[in-house]
Amino acid sequence: MRQHRPRLNPALYVGLQRYFFTFCTAQRHAYFIESQSVTCVHRQILQAAALFDMEEIACCFMPDHVHLLVEGHSEASEALAFVHRAKQLSGYEFSKMFGRTLWQPSFNDHILRDDEATLSVARYIFENPVRAGLVKNPEDYPFLGSAKYSTREIMEAICWQP
Image: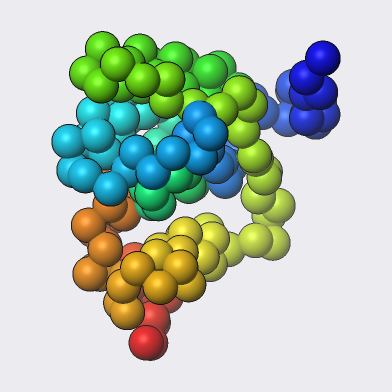
């Protein structure tokens, strides 16, 4: 019997909050190494965000997982419903396109506290490909970005230095 990761009180996932989510691919397959698969999945994640009044602050598609920093834009924003729909929509489209199961069950999450700077988390997300040795500069990695800011805006705001 598979153990489910315990979650916080569901009420904490509703409203004007910021969340850092990580979704891993099934069996940690490196599905996110080509723009076609990243574009397919990202489009569905953004569609789910719009449905639940969530905005993508930063995202990074690593070969076998995706990091998302999202923010609820109303008291009715539902982060858990967003995650469920994002994984459902993207998994369905990915399966139609590539004939494979996309996601592992569950996800990792962190609700940002008031004292945690949004751009510090964005920096962490954008530096992932550098830490993994995939690129020397985050701006050279093709599978990161933001629906709210340009990559340059985030990089300038966090004063990234190689």
